[in-house]
Length: 80
Image (cartoon, rainbow, N blue to C red; front, side, top):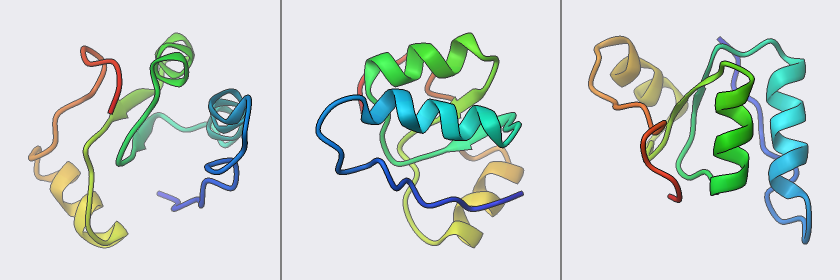
């Protein structure tokens, strides 16, 4: 597992697309994130990446929560 900073987070346009490219280029199977826009979510789901939104806390804590099954996937929700 890798923690990767979203360097596109404050970009004006295309931030979601650039973030999806970054995640896909890493070969990610799961994305643990606080929020995800609807376009980025749709694009991620299209690449087969499991998206878990609403995460908060330290990276270590969030990964542990995921491993324990305490986090829900955000695939059915759109904007967080």
